Length: 467
Image (cartoon, rainbow, N blue to C red):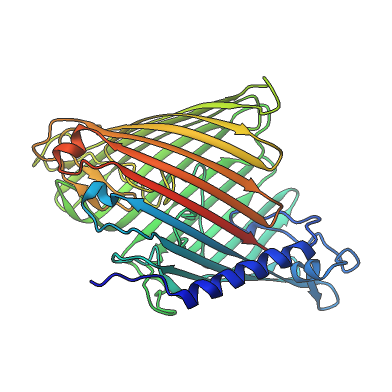
């Protein structure tokens, strides 16, 4: 396949758009504006006609029907540049110039009174300059990313029950199992029927969904594609304060899966719990999941436990944070045993171990110390060093999306390697975010024995504008 080099005309247009965005943001009024990861959770119904005094606030809150209803607009423009040396630990085509990712999200949020609401969002994800085969995660030119209907069934005495029906993003807990997939170029969505019950101290979701399998054409993502199904419930503490937050959940999936020792239609059940505390001097997040079910003719018995703990030290103006993450993720115990022990993270964060996204949480032992410094109120520096081992010698190494990187057969070593990452993040204002990062992955004995022994270097720059 011939290399695809950046088109100068396209790059110039992108730079002009960036300049327009940076110039325009100086005229925006950020008062009372809070952007959330799930944009449909933003609430501008608290505005009134008299409080929307600027052009921007009129975009966020446009009343009609004598002020009983309103429409709100918003979106995001994100540019990323990445450069890799020795991709695939030396097994993939080298690219000297790097590549550019561009993502556009734009939404409209229409509220009819207090009970009915329609939310729609389009997504366009493009890649420029890549010399390798791209996937829909990198490139999906234009599609309907979200389109769902809300109906508030009950709303009294601090209790609210809502039905959400249609295409929507899902994110639960730490997003280790169900995530919006923020890191990659294309975010993920589900066609879902979801009941959401909210009490003052409790939130409970129950849902049945089909995963939206994206393609690289225009408006071609099929609704209700039953090839990948997700159902379950998630119960979470809605107001964690001085006491820890506590989550319980059940998740069921049915889809096609491929592991080292088995492949076929997988039906897997996950029971999990999460105990967490944040916003204090000492923060922690503990999660444990057990899975069972079957795939083809084999039983599934898998598990994972994870812990992320950190402490903020008031030693100086930098307020350093010292932290340690660790994960144990089960792998297959024996070949040809008709039992699969490989944990399936379902629909996890795309940038699971940093934006380099080199390996995924399957058959893994991970030890991950990190440090973070607040350079000032807007700028943060962080660094981490991640050590990876295979949990089982009888299982392989997997990518974040579940693709098998190497089956691990006839390799005794468990040592996958280590990854050093560092980044500087700048939240210039509520609208603009910048990030500069660098990653170095040093292959261990396992990758060297698999003829994947070159050090990977990655450098990346991210610029995000939200409105």
